[in-house]
Length: 321
Image (cartoon, rainbow, N blue to C red; front, side):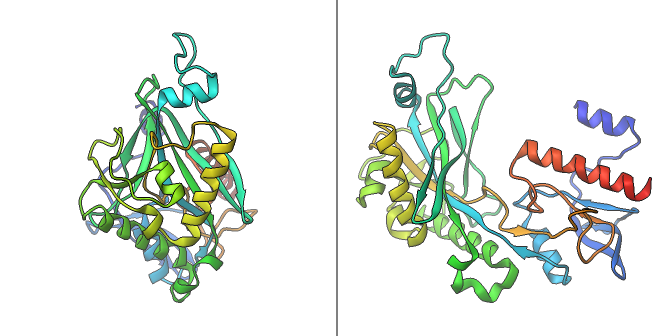
C-alpha cells in the first residue's frame, strides 16, 4: 500500500488487469505499449520489468524480431523435511526451545563440473503450486513471517547450460524456454494431469527405487507417488542424485525417506536475457526500451530486482534530465 501511495502521490498511474499485447515502435525506437483491450499508452521510455514467468513477453519479442539471448539457468526439485529433522541437524537437538528460530540450511556442491545447490530455502514453510498455465506443474516454496510451520523446504537445483539442450537447438534463443516448458508439461502428465504433484521419498530418489508410501507434506493439493528418477532428464537427475548424496555426507540425516522430493522446481531464473547496453541500459536494438529485473535476466530475486529497477530509473533520468 505504501509503494502504491508513493507512486500515486508522484503523479503515477496504476492499471491493474491490463496486459501488454504489443509494442509501439517507430523505426528503431519504442514510443509506447498497446494493451490487450486495444488501448495505447505512449511514453518517452518504456521499462520492461516483467517476471521471469511472463513467457508471452518473450514470445512477443521473438515474433517482432527484437533481440533476445539464451542464457544458463537451473532446474530441479523441491525437497521437504519435517522441521524437527533440520533443527536436529543444525542444532543437534530436535527441540530447539522457545528462543531459537526454525533452522535453515544452504548447500552448494560441484558435480561433474556443474553446480548443484539449494535455492529459496523456507524454514517452517509451505510448498505451493506455481504453475502459470493449466497444462504444467511447477512448485515453489514460502515461509510465513513466523516460520512456525511443521516442515522445512528448499529448491535443490542443477545448473543447465545451452549446450545441454542440443535437441532444442532449432528454437534458437528460446532453447531454454522450450526445455523448461516441456519439463513442466511432463511433470503435469506424471501427476495424472491433475493439480497434485509427483513426489518420491528422498532416499528412494537417490537410490533409484519407487516409493510405495509418501510421508505427510505441506503441499495442499496433494501428492502422487512417481518415479522422478526415471522421467526427469538424465543430465539433471544424475547430478541431483549425486548432489543429494554429497549433502547427506555433510548433514547426517538429511537423506532419508522421512524427506520427499517434489517436481518440478523450474522457475529459479529466466532462461532468456533481453540484452541491453552496459552503459545506457537501453536495449541493444530498440532505443528507449529499458529491460529490467528478473524477467530481463538481470536479477535473481526480489531485492536484486528492486536494485536493478533503481539503476534503470537513474539511467532514464540521465537520458532525459
